[in-house]
Length: 257
Picture (cartoon, one colour):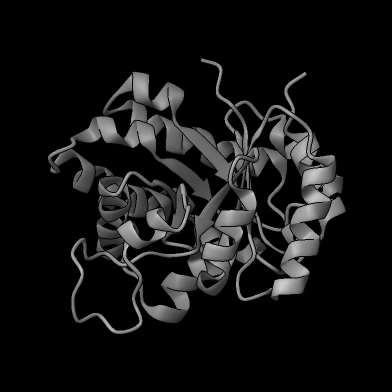
């Protein structure tokens, strides 16, 4: 099944109003057609960038979302409806940094996924193993556990497992994020195929259509080889998304010829 490639830029805690404007202008000036492109800046810049990107080919995503679906006494949190109101179409959930630094659990990530879907957002659901888990041969088991929490939550929700078709999965080996180390194309393909196989065990049609991105030190020099793998549908890009020329080059690598 043909899947539209996606390249999403996770700006993490980087940016300023001036730098953001320059970055977006540089990306828009040279952006190739074909892949779906999303940028995910810090919360404080979402509204401004939502206006700047309105009518463009670039989608806007947040880096996290509250699991609660109703407004209330949740100091410091931002709800999915709020994100949608300021122009977001996507949101990252379960990024490894949120899991490691801020205690996001598999169950919590599943709840955030449901909250995002309820508001009409596309969740980019992150899964991935730490270095010690890979070295211990636990990669598949770790990824399966993270993914299964989301699948079970979706299957038990009012929207059902079919709502997985509105999600994007991102495999991000934790040992390859910001370290300069990158999973080889074969390693990435192995885990991506495993993810698709786990989904196919529940619904083959959804497995064939859901996009699985790779995230972990993707650069212009390795993007094309990674994206050429059968089950790699693009990338979730960190540091390289902060430089317009590098991000555009990575998007170009995802163009299906």
